Length: 516
Image: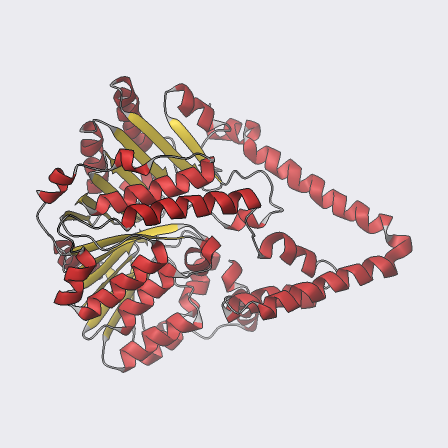
């Protein structure tokens, strides 16, 4: 079945029809209340007033996010408040809250178990580097997983090499395979993985697969989960896209995780689609990165995976069943300290942004960043500018070939204040860079799924790995410097004078940047 026919018969058509019906319902409501418009208008104004008060009283929200919602409420008082109630704030149901608390208790119980030596990796880290322990302690308290030793790392500077490694590791699976991805697209990459998964299922390996419904909206057929279940996979579709009129629409599972037997784990920016391994050219050469962990830290990834699975699927696993043998972990040599962490928007703790800010603010020599999008809040701009003005070598690589022209235009608009402060910005000229990395002082690095934009930092479920003195840190730095040779440095004079329509459009984009 070709893509055009799949589009006609697939779920996209149902969503378009559903949205059209809802729009028609709003028009009918308007004409129905025409004779009593004064009452209808008063109710809408009261809703907008209530929404405004709620936004202003929400001390945990970023000011830019507040402004982005206050503007439509002021411009469209009739429906502005209603829009905010529908999209602006997601509150968990009683069942979801209870399930989330139960999972969190299980995570805490597992992670609080003291090791046989009585000394945790955090204790050792505090002795070796109190400053590094500050980073780790925050991530431990905010995401629930501690720093780990006894873990080897392999950094992948391109999707093709990571794909080959995933295939090799999947072939070695003996007990279970857990996978979780934002985008899955039928093609060379996914077909190769699926073939191995089906074979492993026949060998008795448990295979779980979780994917985001909206992320796969245009890439997978309708009811694809049924197809996978028929092949023997346990499948969870995260946040099914049944209606646009829900704040859940904004919270997507942007994580990319692959775990084999609780011993090996992968994460990074690489989804399961052919452009990520340059099997075909979508936006020029696709530059992406990832990391493999082997050892103790993979247990943290396993716990994080099961926690979200149980929350999304309404199940209750015994996490300890999937723990790797303690004697096997003890044989893995130390390679610095690793801390896999997640960021979940429902807890209103900005783990992803805070981890980045901690690294930037504590840098002494340099901080190098790759990100596909640069749509940042005042806190991030201030940190980057302050670091550069303090003499820190701050460099950022973004794409030269955009995947979304509006976001690309918005990304470039943030260059000016950064360049004026001394931040050096480069664009990857061969194509699109999708990597999300940060490395500092030959000591710290972060590799994961977290973009420097509002959606990643505020709305999406994300994951990453924090590293201290791991061998992968120098590999991340080397890859950044190597990527610079294929990138064009940007200067203020590279951007001509904007026409007034573009300035107007840019002003609108900046106002609504937290919602883009």
